[in-house]
Image (cartoon, rainbow, N blue to C red):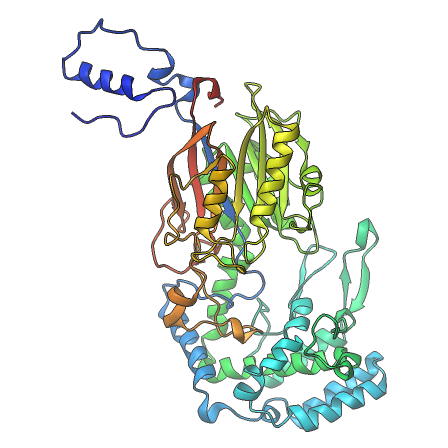
Length: 554
């Protein structure tokens, strides 16, 4: 006799044994009258289907992360870049062989014409001669830790890599590390386009607070790098940090164009185009496709790190937009553009009343643990009139904000919304090992237990069962974050970070799954994103079963 493997809500051990005895003929048919709830009433048969997903990953740089790619040419290219950086040898030429004397002169002239004080331009020109032109491109520029600490390349890259325009389009810097589709097959072709991008064409930027768009040169978007924030940069460098960033950006971009053309001139741009199409340009459509197929039956979908453009696509989607109501935080940040939202199935939830209580929760925090847009908390009602307190949260990189934010949600819930059923979906940024710098999986689970909460990973999460498996490549502005191919699984971000949590007195989790394919299955030790799965976080889903008959809400 095969007994029930899953415990239905309301069915205790006594009834399960009786049913088994009846099945083998030990008890007569009239021995007992089965309670209506124990037979699995229609209203509770399926429970509440919940999913959480941090949909971020590749932002602007399609080469930033190692991805699983079926084309051997991609792996050959990325291995070539790794070897170029690790074993540059004779390829480690002086910077002036790439950014020539005539190119440097053109750059300094462009700076002067733009209006940068001539004294500052002259200072940068002197530093070019004394500090930069003779540096080896790999060992003394790309690997220079001081350049990284001073943010001389990473800061201007952040500002100019991919610029959102007033008309909804983007302006792309001519560089290897974005989706620029111009000709970068030679240094000369790249240099003409690069100078035009910074110093010639004005772009229309969105106005702040609904104001009219503003036009400016890209070069005017750069901001000083402050010694107070980045102590590695000297006060003298701070004074000339804008033109110094321009020089560093030119050198960095030039090195990458030179390197990739040296490695494989004919294939690197087509490979980049394919990755861009999948993970950048078509990313939102892939996410929508996964949500509308594999997670079509979900009642609650928590999403983190969503962009404003994606939110608009959700609303406009004939499938997802018609079946779900979208709730976002009142303090959504359009500049960081990494907002937590939630999708609630209209068949289960009423569209009114809905109360955004994010601000109430934030006021419970002693410190500013949640950046604008990272947290959304709402009070809603099901069609049966059952009240829910729902929260979606994206934690800080080290996970140190996760417990304080959950505590603030709990305090708000207990003080003013205790008649609500609590469910949260979060990227908690939890790690295998807990210490003062990183929030650990087991420590967080212990915190949940003390607070009367449980999670989709009940009875205990396995820290070695990750929901992320990614590693950064050598094609980026901060090489200190790069990880070799052979070290991806041991030194990469391979951690259990994503959680669905709830009150253990109200629900239990059934059939929890993690998914890094978009097909509700997880391939262990596969780095992602992939060309068909555009996030570096797995989708985590579960079914929440009410622990009592009174908890039948779905």
